[in-house]
Structures are given as C-alpha cells and as structure tokens.
Image 1 (cartoon, rainbow, N blue to C red):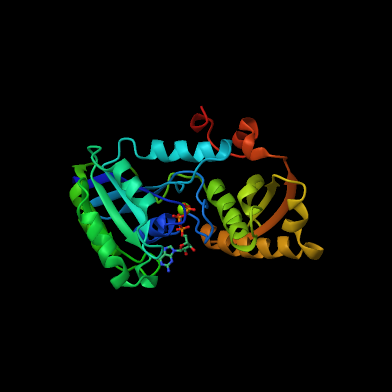
Image 2 (spheres, rainbow, N blue to C red):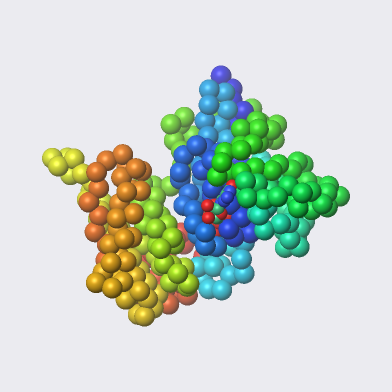
Length: 300
Ligand SMILES: Nc1nc2c(ncn2[C@@H]2O[C@H](COP(=O)(O)OP(=O)(O)OP(=O)(O)O)[C@@H](O)[C@H]2O)c(=O)[nH]1
Ligand SMILES: [Mg+2]
C-alpha cells in the first residue's frame, strides 16, 4: 500500500518553540526543550507514522549568530537540514510578536521551490488582537504557502496543521519502520536528557558551555536496571563549582531530574552517576567538539 510520505524541516530563530512543536507533532518527546535560547544543537528527526502516512520532521538548532566552532556547527546543521525536504516550516514566536528578523528569515526561505509554511507558535500566551496587524503584514509576502497559528504546549491546532501538511508530501513507501520515532541513538537521547536538566537549572553562560559524554551505558539483566555513567564537560574551571553547587547539591538536583527523564525514556529503572570534568574552551576546539559527539562532517 502506498503512503503519503515526506520530509518537513522545522526552522526559526532560537527559542521560537521548534522542539516543542516537533514533540507535539509526533506525540513523543525526542527533542529537548528549555526556556534558554540555543537548546537544540544538532538537527534531530521525529517520525510520525500512521497506516497511510509518514511525516519525517527535522528539528534544527535555532538561528543565532555563531560565536564559536560549536555555533558554526549548529548553523551548518540548519543548512543541511533544509536540503531535499518537501516542505519548510518556519516557526515564529507569537508571544514575542513578528519581528523584522522573522521577516528576514521568511525572505530567506521563500521562493526556493520548496513550499514554505509559516507557523506562529505560543498562541496560548499571545493576544490575538496584537497579532492580527502583524499577520496582515505577512499576507503581502510572496512565497508563503500557508500560515498557521498553534500552541504546541497545549496541542492546539496541531492536528489541523498536520492534515494540511499532507498536501506538500508525495506518494511512496515509508522511509522508516512504523515504530521508529527518531534517527538518534538511545545514547544520544540519554545525553540530551542530562543536558536539558542543566539548561533548566543552571543560569547565564554555564549551561551553554556544557557537553555530555557517556562513559558507560549497560543494562544489568539480573538487577533489571540500566547503569549509566556520564561526564559533564564544562568549558571553564570556574564553572565546575557552580555545577557541583554547595555540598554537591546542584549536581544532585541535576542527577535526580535527569534520572527521572531517562527512566521515562528507557521505560526502566536507572542508576545514574555523573562526573564534572573541565575541558577549557572546548566549544572553540574542533577536536574536542567532535570528541564530545558532534558529527565531524558538519565541521568541514
Ligand atoms: N506557552 C507556551 N510556551 C511554549 C510553547 N512552545 C514552546 N514554548 C516554550 O518556549 C521555550 C522554548 O521552547 P523550545 O521548544 O525549546 O524552542 P526552540 O525553538 O526549540 O529553541 P532552540 O532549540 O533554543 O532554538 C520553552 O520554555 C518552551 O516551554 C507554546 O506553545 N506555548
Ligand atoms: Mg530546540
């Protein structure tokens, strides 16, 4: 039986709500979310399969000016994600209002021979009267196929959006097995859960300078528990005591929260051990960026 299939890239400025939208579209949490910009560092696929349709959504890091090797990696990851897709979905933070920089992104992606769908997000915390004149401004821009207003957090208008996206896809066999939800390994998803908790509890530049590397991830059949041992890589010596906290309280908090998320992900009990290591300025070092797990091809 043929399916309606296709790839849909999700792009937009940092913090617009792209990853929340991806998770809401596929009804699973594969991409981490936080109130801080630049949470997503690597493009990640979320797959939505039904009996007659498979939509492959590609979440991307948010647009921001690259400041280091990792930032350049993130920018390349966005550029690669939009190549060969059937539709580009540009997410704009409705709560912030439609800004000049959003219009610039629209022009960047419009008229590329790939349909451009604009999604205004966070409508649950946006006043419609405020948004109306701004939406009217978008109507005059050529190359926008459609505009949708959604709340990914409250799952509002998400099914309607998915239904409308079908018309940009094509007929063919599914790309992925029906039960697959992402292209990333469990090891990657585990590291991301740990990083998400650090994005949530640590302030200022500290969480942006963190990488996570697994030392061990093994399932103990006898005890029926996953044993996970990971290094938190900080980029400055001065960040280490902040991550540890007074009497190790901060690290403990991160560990408790991360363990709960990983248990949900792995559907199993988890024993989690975290260590803090310092690799000075790793975000500016190609070798260390790849060592921490970012793909070398996006650095070339
Ligand atoms: N109220 C509300 N908040 C939302 C909604 N969507 C996202 N958010 C919040 O907006 C913040 C950013 O969400 P993300 O999904 O991480 O945004 P992003 O575009 O993926 O961000 P980067 O990965 O940093 O580019 C988080 O605090 C989310 O909880 C929404 O529909 N309503
Ligand atoms: Mg994101």
